[in-house]
Length: 69
Image (cartoon, rainbow, N blue to C red; front, side, top):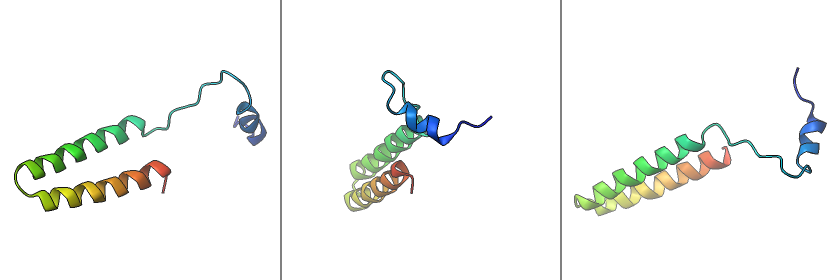
């Protein structure tokens, strides 16, 4: 049976209730680490402009993913 909305709202006020981690918590960290490593590698290989653009685009994507857009 599905939990009603009032019980979810009421649980926010109960002390000691652990919050559930979202389903993509570890995946998000893995994607962020791989993206940062790839862009750092591009910068180390001499293509600083492409690495910087990659980091900027990746951070926007990760931000949107994190806020659930």
